[in-house]
Length: 90
Image (cartoon, rainbow, N blue to C red):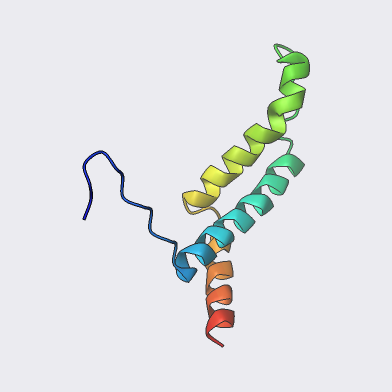
């Protein structure tokens, strides 16, 4: 029963959801490194953002990689998730 004005307590995440989230985060970390290697986030010669751009570009690359992973990425998270599920059911 929900009392008026008091939000319901959030439900704890299932093991499956925790593993899915972990797999997406692992894929995002992989994609972040791949994007950095490809030169994404490097300072531009003209019209650059200066020191601020240099300081925060890694955060932008991490968030872009996370969004890529959440929207399907390269399929690595699904492979990782299946592997983790097999290991938890073993």
